[in-house]
Image (tube, rainbow, N blue to C red; front, side, top):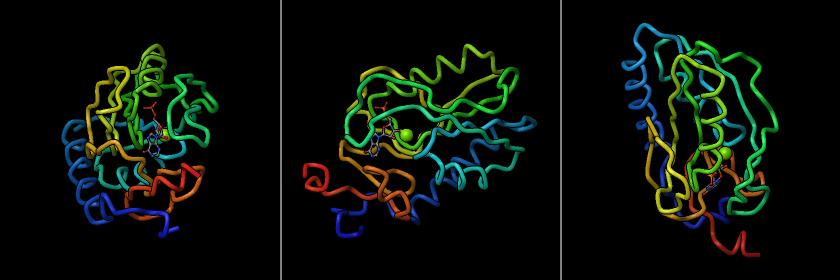
Length: 179
Ligand code: IMP
Ligand code: MG
């Protein structure tokens, strides 16, 4: 698995430090409120678990799954809900947690969908952002890191369901997905 990684882009230490910072910022912004964190399955799970522990106001968690890339590396533009929320978001302070925003198509669709369910507020937190690849505008409230246009894996992010358990964010060797 490590042989497929070209280089480490963000170490476990860098990730942990930034997540503490974002957690502190969120704690301050939501003082006196409760947060409903909505994780976008499956990539956001590891980030969300660490972020939740860095936030000091009450946090409830729920998950959604939407279709994205299958096993390829570029977006189809078609977004489908594969698993919906278990909780009603009406009147809640929703914080959507994503692993990476690339074209923006997934989040653009998801945010519109969630806004129609009348939450008290809705914000977006992403660990990684690839601004060069944006196709539709997405307003990011909390951004971990801007990353260059490489296919990255680890810390929740996969290629064909592999590499999610790497403790760092690494750049995948192109020959892995070019065959
Ligand atoms: P978007 O709709 O193009 O913004 O796609 C977002 C989704 O694509 C993310 O939630 C990831 O699951 C996946 N994705 C985009 N870029 C990468 C990457 O570099 N590595 C792993 N997954 C990625
Ligand atoms: Mg994802």
